[in-house]
Image (cartoon, rainbow, N blue to C red; front, side):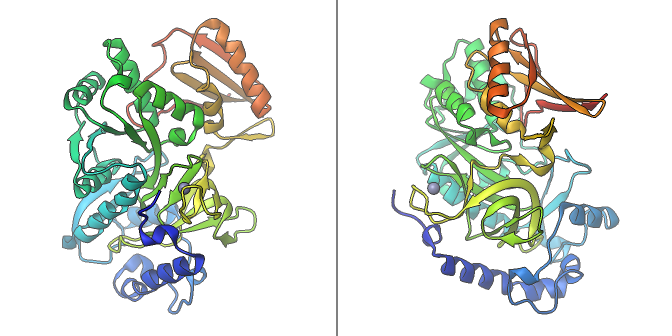
Length: 415
Ligand SMILES: [Zn+2]
């Protein structure tokens, strides 16, 4: 593959120099006009390590104390043109504002993502997304317009209507969560439509790790007849990552984001290794985040990738948030590890996992939509591969809830 942008094959030196130049040139303005960072930034900084971390709690507390937008505002409010908010799964939603310039930056951030997936101006891109206040695929839509592709909105439609729209418009690219891709295929089958025979050829997924989980990606590719790509991003930070032809992880766009990995034990931040992903964005100057602790657990590697890029790669994508990890009888497990096993069973449709704490002992229980004889096979595979016992019950197809955005399949209860 050729035709990379210069930053995609940077040396370490080129990357560090460019990133620090871009960040340090903006620090004086933040020190002068952004109240949130005026209170945090040191007077002099000679490198990233001199700057403090920013946490989600810092942003939430600031916004709660200074409603409705907080003090992380570099410009007067009239400069801002868009409001998006986090889904609020962990507490109050956070409100994020963009200026026209920073929204243009979001558009630019989508270009390497589309390029890595081979999407061009010739494509028709269907966005199976609600277009509510969550930033989700709003920025992808804007980025696709910039690319020159034909953008098809799938807001305010039922799943059946979306299937019909994909077929009727001969869409070639699908944007949605991995869960919803499988839901579309299921709804299509119920209508006697095989989406694998539609014009779809590429899908790009976000919101869940599914497109980096081989078994889930295989199923999406088979049921939709596409090549599936993963994308990572966050409302607070931007659209930062994309999978490539090597299909073993997600590169971060290091032209627009600085990547660090925080070792949870020592508190040291490094350029690679295993730990919490820390990101600094380099284009959203109206409401920036500096050394933002994302809460995502990653393993970052810096070997040259098979695709030819030198950009850092999050091996296996983002497996989960630090708070998603559960400990079952001493074994640490991410929900994505369970998904990776369950999705290998073609007979299983939807599923649900319950973690119940009974007298300080964690019990894992799984419900799968599948024929009864599959349950035992799933239980044995989980035991063999993860080293944990999990009771598995089979139920009839269509029994468990379906999801439009991010799935909520994992439930924790204390007894
Ligand atoms: Zn690669």
